[in-house]
Length: 294
Image (cartoon, rainbow, N blue to C red; front, side):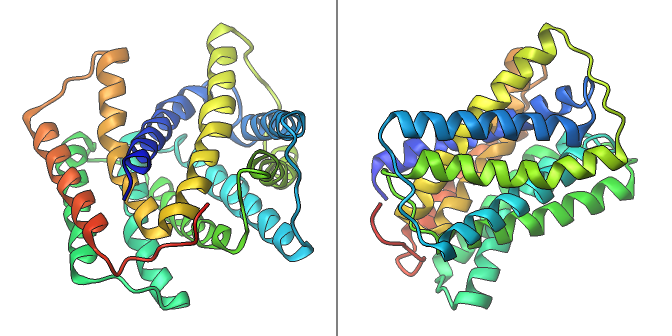
């Protein structure tokens, strides 16, 4: 794996980690589905306009457009809708642990559906990485939690697993990536609007905290995150891309340490070392799936 891929993967994990505490903050001021609808509509339109301004063109056939729409419905509508709803029931630490299983589920379903090969080194790396996540997160899980929130998180995990595999069907490149990102966000917003209309009361507490949170989530996890995601998946494949999700819990704790004063423990340090070892093993596996060049 090239050094630029490592830097981008670490950057993606940092951006994705920041989305969990940001989402937890956002649902304090707005119903979850309505917040997501506002986020994806505004960010999607901006991404398409920016891509058009930069000279990008869609250049995709009807089948690819359908896959993009399906991805947007599953990832932005179903997955994030479930996670935001779960965060009204459980602590974000629990949701992060469940989300960190993604590399394992992607590897399994890649093998099941596409016969993707993953050698012993790669499988060992995924298990080691998950162990590192547990070292960091289990000490922070409260003893009591709502089973509904846990169930929603696992449903979300399956949704994002399939969206990760679906997007491999689309020929995303540097000439259309911003427009693709925008379209998949708008597809998600169309799914979220009726859910919000029928099941939520549209009441938003507009203040500076809400505005800053909204702008940050729309720009970074909303636009920049998917751009890096699609690029890496095209360059290094779904399994290796997904392995960077193991870093999300540590970065989440680190963000809380700097912003909220949360304590970093010795187990955290050991955990991140174990995660890095897991990433190393996965990326040393020569059998792991790799897509065509971007």
